[in-house]
Image 1 (cartoon, one colour):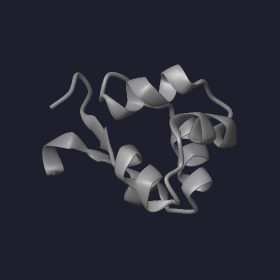
Image 2 (cartoon, helix red, strand yellow):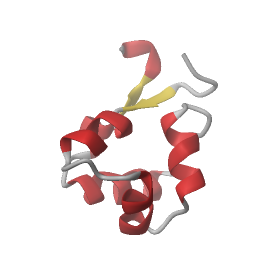
Image 3 (cartoon, helix red, strand yellow):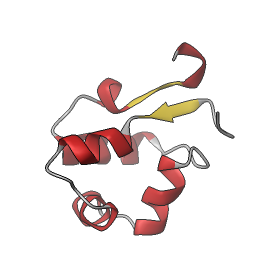
Image 4 (tube, one colour):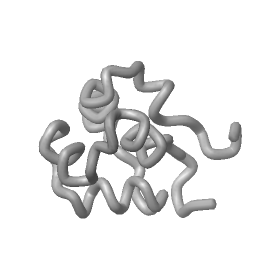
Amino acid sequence: MSGTPVGNHIRRLRFETGEMTQSDLAERAGITRQTVIALEAGKYAPSLELAFRIAHAFGRPVGEVFFWADQH
């Protein structure tokens, strides 16, 4: 699936959250759009702080956004 054992539901959640764009998420989480792209592609595992910031942007617990890839 990816180069990191941490998977995520970012792409799905963006569409479930009123068609949020990558740029919208980046702005809400205080990161770059390129970081969102890398996260969605599974090429980058976020720091704990970033994981919480992204989850907060969606109004979801961290566990609903990120997961261990071998568990899904």
